[in-house]
Image (tube, rainbow, N blue to C red):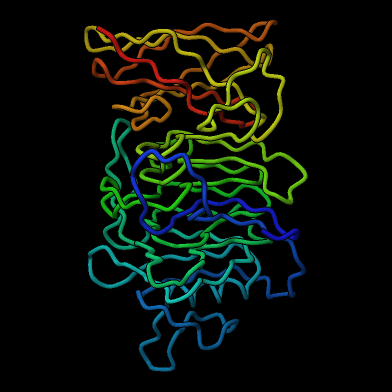
Length: 397
């Protein structure tokens, strides 16, 4: 990263080992923030509909038509749509309508252009695609896959730079880029309803080279409040989600909400806030009073004390020590075998700390968690800072 840019990444890389290696390398899917001077452009928001899986450039960027060929067919590729979106100021939209009701794989032959405008890239517009509608599982159907196999050594997938605040990337399967692919820039980027690190069915392991999502700037949302917003972030060779300070950044990234996602089978941590007192794997220990500072203000996680399943209900008990007299959103997850991840979202609860920053809680899950599985939890403060996932607690009978 150069001194002229801050970056928010959500990354996909070439297949790697699935083992729990404690290594950190380059990120694989990037959401980027770059600062620079941009040329003036027409202030007309446009909608461009990708109807071809090919990778040709637009023949005349700026004419308002996504057209990658001089023939009468008028194919619109993703590359051409990005080039046209860059030529128009305003809230541009990239939709998809590629013929044939099957998963369409786009394999860029080189890095896609960085986006310098507010944009919504919506994979759910592809015929046959649909977002998740289930509160207790994931029935999303994704039909657009970005495969970076042919894109070159350090190629990025989707990169959004200066001018692209409040962008949205949703409904995509993104994998096998060796460099970065990304969204965000200044603030407000939403990464929702994507499969990051899985196969196109959302469940099979693909193997990503490093972090699934990496954030180095502020006020982004990975997942969200609704079931349709949740991402699947799995099988990455390092952290599922990492929030960190880039090498040239002068402020901590804060206000990053990480909500409802299925985060599992990553090689290191489910969520990693880099800083504070850490274990060898990067797990940040809670501090009394939650007074330390760092990415997402190093928000303390809930400490679970028991989890029992009886009569079709799982009861989770624990405590939170954090900022006094504040209300926090606790989210609870189950995982079959990893104590610092959360494969299945099982619900949430609001709690308010007392004058000493303490609160005890009991959460009754409407979904019974199997005995000997693990439950974990996150805490999100009023400023939108989500903690790491807690140390898991085994469910007893």
